[in-house]
Length: 381
Ligand code: V47
Image 1: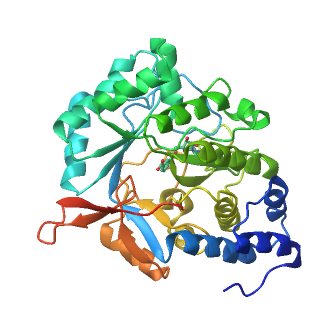
Image 2: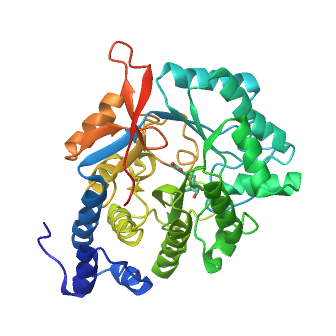
C-alpha cells in the first residue's frame, strides 16, 4: 500500500497504479531533487511486487577477465592496461581451465566473462576461451562478451554479427552480459568512450542475439558527466528494443566508481542517488522483468535497501571481480551463499537461487555442489 505521494507525483502514481507507461518527461521529473526518494521507492516497490512478488533472487557465480589489455581508453575505466604496463596481464588456457574448476568446486552455475580488447589476440582466442571452458566444465553457463567485444570481433573477422554469434554459440556461449552500454546519448558517449562500440552497434548486436534466441542483460553507467535527460533517454532506448524483441532478462544500473579513472575528480553517487536511480529504472522499464542491485558496486547495505526500491535480484556470490575493485570498490571479493540468503531475508525478502536464465536451481541436499534446474521463473505477461 502506498502511504504518501508528493503532489507532483500524482499523475505518475495514477499511471503506475493503472499499469500505464511513463514518458520521457515523467522520468525527468522523477529526478528533480525535491521529489522524495521514498515516494519513488514506494511506487517502484508496487511494480516490483506486482512482477516478482516477495522474492529476492541471487545466483552462485564467478567472474573471469582473461586480459586487461585494451585498445580503448574509456575515461571511466580503471581496469584497462597498456600492453607494456606493469599492471597488464593475459591469462593462459591452463589458468582459465583452473578458474573453471574452482567455479565448479564452489557450486557455481555461471561464469561471467568480459575483458579488454587485446590488439594482439585474434577472434579465435576469445572464441576458444568459451570452447575450452565448455569442454572441461560443461555445467557452467557462460555469460560472455558484451557488444563491445562482439563489435571488435566484427572488425577483426569482417564477418556479420550473426555469423560471429553463431560461432560463439557453437563454442558454448550461454548468454550476453549487459556491459558496454554506458550512456547511449552521443553528447555523453562521445566524451566518455569515444570510438568504442557505438550506440547503434550495441543495439544491433543485442537485437541480433535476441533474434537468435540468445538472452541478454542491459546496464546503464550513471553518476559521472550525464544529466537526468541522458539517463531517461538511455532507459527509453532499452525499453524500445525490449518492445521489439523481449530478449532482455534484467537491467543493472551501475554507479560510477571514480578512483583510478580519468574522471577521478567526480564524487561517487550517494546511496540516495543509487536508490532513486533503481526506483526510476524499475518504473520506466515496464517491460523488463528483473532489476539487479549489484551488491559489489552498490555496497551491501544499499543493495539490501534496493530490494524495496524496485530491485528483485542482488546478482551473485561473485569471485574475482576486478572492474569495480580496481576503481575503488570496498565491498568484499565474494559472499557465501549463507550470507547472501541472510542479507536477502534481513531485507524482508524470500531468497531464491536462480540460474542465469532465471530458472530455479535445485541443490542436492547431501552435496550442495550438485544441482539441477527447476521451473522457469515466469516473465512478464
Ligand atoms: O560496461 C567500468 C562499468 C561495466 C567502471 O550482465 C564501471 O549480469 C562504475 O556490465 N565505475 C561492466 N562502473 C559490468 C557489467 C555487469 C556487472 C554485473 C552484472 C552484469 C550482468 C553486468 O562496468 C562496464 C561499465 O559500464 N564500469 N568501469 C567504473 N569505474
